[in-house]
Length: 203
Image 1 (cartoon, rainbow, N blue to C red):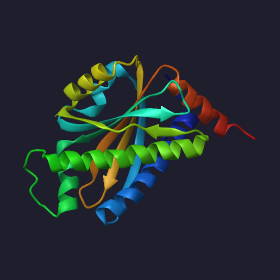
Image 2 (image 1 turned 90 degrees about the vertical axis):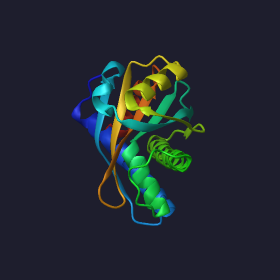
Image 3 (image 1 turned 90 degrees about the horizontal axis):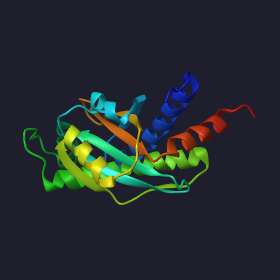
Image 4 (image 1 turned 45 degrees about the vertical axis):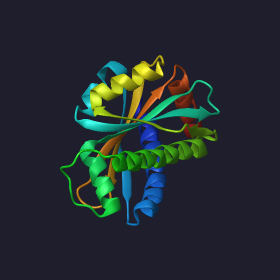
């Protein structure tokens, strides 16, 4: 799907509103200042997603979208292993960056993913005047490509295009990068764009 500059800007704005909401909650959780932004948004064919998510070991927190839009989909928070450990270390005051992902890391990334997705859906719902809620999350940890393939096979939805919100999270240097990936059911992406177009239309 080709987006014009105005709709691309609208999706970026949508992402940044959600990121601002998430940063506020994460700041309270981590008890330190947090900045979060969405510098880039891409709509790509699902077959090309591997150009955008890398192939390092990552944690993928998966949420089903529920609410007013019956033709929903899923949101996936994709955070690389190094970023997962960095976030948990900041929460626990640890400095060991060479360890493997532990149950504590899994619990932390699930909670962080829940905060990010809830904030994103809250921002979308408020902006567009609809209700969007996340399901309880499922977590997968593997090489990013393999984990994504397993998730798509498990949720078994007919997806052609995905929306990738690149995220940049600043707690302490260095910045933490990840993705929020929208896997829309047929019709969801068109409906969101229709709502955005209506919001941007001259009154």
